[in-house]
Structures are given as structure tokens and as C-alpha cells.
Image (cartoon, rainbow, N blue to C red):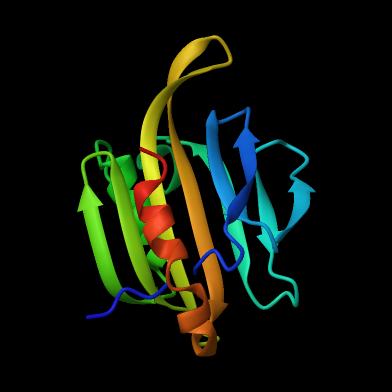
Length: 159
């Protein structure tokens, strides 16, 4: 079973830090930062021809029962988040640990999706809160050789 993934074509040279959810990540020099979202939850980065995108974002880790009436109270927020994130994907690789998950698969367009999400406690608005910090890459399957090493970077990031 292959892990599908993106390489730094010109070396990691740029860094993005998200103040709201307190994480940083590097992205390839040839990718363009598209500007942080209005609410400060993250940013998208595009390959030169727009064929690949990197998403870096955070979100509060809420009790799934507060979000979805069909979920029992006490359901693990990380596992619920994983199930929601992979609902429309054909997953070929996954790792789920107590404080993070990684998955790889294809979406309905045939693009490769590789993602790591970490659950972390941070000082959020003056109090300790659990948050999810995520880095995701989506790219055409035909570009797998071009982008293969970036998955290793993602897997090692957000420690």
C-alpha cells in the first residue's frame, strides 16, 4: 500500500505561522501564499500552475455531540474529525494515534489528498482549549513523483 504524496522542488524556504491556532509550517519556495482567511484560521498555498494546493489551518476541537445530533456524547473528537475529513475519500493509508492522525487517498476528482491533523491544548483566548492543527496537500495523481517528498515533511510536522 503506497503512501501518496509532494516534494519540495526548490527546497523549503518559506514559513507560515498561524497565530490564532499557534502552529507553523514550511512550504516550497515555488508555491504562492494566497493570504490568510478573514477569521485567521489558516491559509492556502498554490503551486505555480495551480495544479496543487497546500492547506494549513486550525479549528477548535469541540465535542462531536455538540456539532452532530447523530453522535453520542463522549465520542472522541479526534476520531470524529478523522471520519468527517475522510468521508468522501478513497483512503489507502491511515494512522490514528491518541493525539493525531494521518491519511492519504483520492478524492472524487481522482486527486491525491494527504493530511496530518494534530490535537493539541493551547492557550486560546485566555484559557486552555483543545484545537486541531492541520496541514493538507491536494494534487493531481499524475504529479505523484513531483510531489512525493512533501508527505514526509507533513508527517514529521506538527509535533
